[in-house]
Length: 478
Image (cartoon, rainbow, N blue to C red; front, side, top):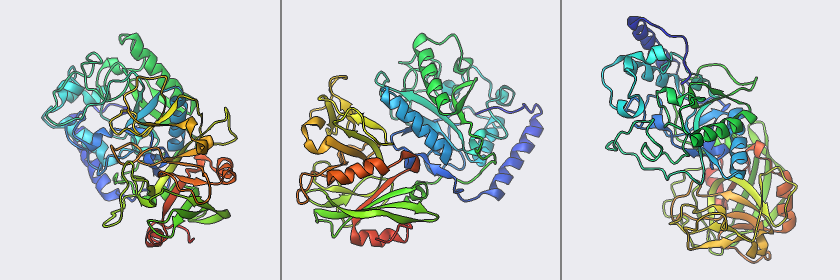
């Protein structure tokens, strides 16, 4: 929370807070078109949206957080995805704690600072008196978060302690306690926990250990390279500095991601359909955005899907399948739904593609063991302790000579299906174990065409289901 100028008189604080609350109620608006869900842009970025739960300094979910989702301006979200791609190449990643914050939530924070009660003081502000929040800048009348380009986040990596599952009965531990004692948020040691109202949370504080200093520097450098500016009093706080960034304060509520929100952000679409749930062969068509809809790009091409057809998967949509099949691990079905397209991969050391590219090694594996911490991820089996009993050896499958990750079941839920790709087929009549395969020339065209800056999506399902959702999701006619 970036502080603004202190307001010293308590009665004036209360008056301003009341005005802010009333203004928020009267000016609440629908989600503007330039605001997108980070999950739709890069689902690989972990999310722990604290103000949608009671695990924050107020001890209650804040007004306006109807869903635990990160929303940002499109430019800021794309820049954050570039940071994630850079960090993942080094073995690290991002986890966000807060992004866009409705103005009513800012007012809620200020209201808490003037009311009695300290339900989470022992964890978040053990050495600060709540009545000093305004003077110290921990509560602001207006927050940059409400403008849509500010994000609170941390750094994940192989040496991070596993995240704990928070409940209201969890013991409160000082946010400045040693790394192995304070709350385990799944991140690396950053010197303090998130939203720690303490001088040790100042970015350049010299009293934290060398490991935490290195981690702060690594995070800050990665963010700065993509145009984010840090904040000296909060190591987790960054603002995207694009000259085109909107400057207006917003108050629309945060609601669950739906298919329409994901599609609104996309400028490239691949639609794959089959005749029915059990069909093994289908057709794919590329589209590019044309105003409020999509136009065809190039010719349709043939694909094959899972040996047992399709089933509803875990993607960006929220489909109620009813009696229709639902995908699970080992079912031999390709996932149906809307999915982000991730990393390209292949046998070659380099590839001519705008997508992030992973050159497969003899030791590259895709983990399909639900009990593994690395379930549904591509890993170098020689570079980390093995906690899995089952995986795909990527260099042992000729079809993986060229492929693209389909972000199904990301983040991974156990047994919901793993290792789903576009890849080269064995033949036009040979189905897969659950992927979508095609001729090598067609996947080469996808390598050339796909651009992560255009937020490409895959829409894949049987023809009848596609027609059923087409109007609701504003999808193009086939």
